[in-house]
Length: 400
Image (cartoon, rainbow, N blue to C red; front, top):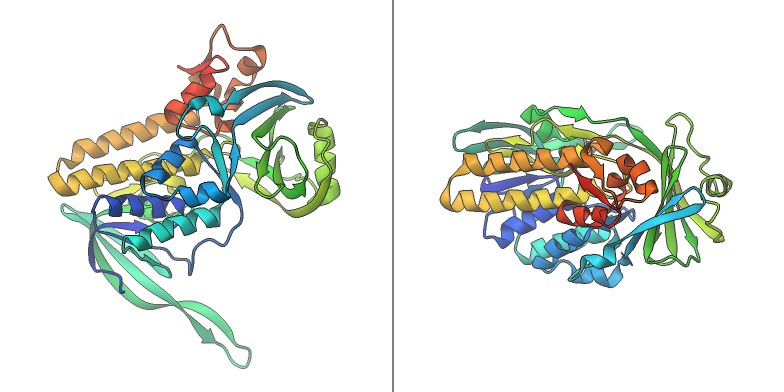
C-alpha cells in the first residue's frame, strides 16, 4: 500500500495524539493518511496516565478494553505537606463509566491505537517526513519525503538516513501532532511561547512492595513538587523536582536520600532500581493553534509539567475536537466559524491550566493547605475540563 497523493486529512505524527485523531477521522468516514519521520512506533515502557475522559473517548472506538486488562487503576490523589498527609481528591467519586485514572505503558497505548486503525484499513507510513507545506483556498499541499537507510563509508561502514523519494500530498486539512520539535508548527509560523519557568525532575522507576496501589501521592516540600505513582507489576515511580544544575544522584542511594528528606513516611523497601533520569519540562503554549487548513494538537501546541499528565490527555481531546469539525466541514462546509471556536476554546483552557494561582479562587470551605498551594495544585490533578473542576471543588477551589 502506497501513500495516497490526495486525501481529506493528512496527520503528521504517529504518537498517541496523531494516532487517535486518525482513528476518530476513520470512524467518521473521513479519508485520512498518517505519516511519521521515525522508523517505527514507540518502544518506550514509560508509563502514561490516562484520564477518565480519555478512557471514555478510547471506548467509543473499542480501544479501551485491552488497556483496561493490563493497566493499573488509580482512584485517588493524596497530598502531603512534607511528612504530614494534608488531604485528597477522590477520582472514584466522578462516577461511571471510568471513575479512575489508568496507568499504561506508552507503547501499549500506541499499539492499541495502531491495531484499531488497521481494522479500519488505515496504515501508518513510518519513515515519512513532512518537508514543507503551503495553503490555498482549497486546502494544503505537503511535500513528503520517504526516508531509507543506506550503507555508507569504506573501509568502516555505517548507515545514514537519506531521502529515497519525495511526494506531493494534497489534503483538505492537515493536523500537526508531531510533538515538541514540530515541523508543522514551524511551517505554520506559530510561536511556542513560554508560560512560566521550566521545571526539572529527577525520576526513578523501581520495584517495591507498596500498599497504596489505588492512589498517587503528591508532596509539597520547600516550594517543590514531588510525586510517586504506583505502576503495574509492583513497580512505582518517584519524580522529585530539583534544580536544573543540581539533579539528584542517579543511584539507589540517591533515591533513598530524596525519600528520606522529602517523604519520610515512605517506608517501603526498594528492591530494584529499574531506571533513572533527570528531565526538564517547559511550560509553553502556541500563540495560535492553527490557521485555515492547518491545525496543531498535543505537545506540538503546548507542554507542561509531568505530574498530572495533562498535555497528552488534553491533546487527545484536541484531536477529537478537530476531527468533529473536519468531518462536518468536509460534509457540509462552514469552516471559518467552526475553526475559530476551536482556537478560542483551546486558548481559554490552556490559559487556565497554565495560569497558576492567578486563575483560581479558594472558597470559604477550602482547607488551609489547599488555599496555600492553589497555584501548584492544578497541574497535579490527572483530569481536565469538567472533571478537573469537579475534583478541585472537592477541596474548595474553583476557576475565576
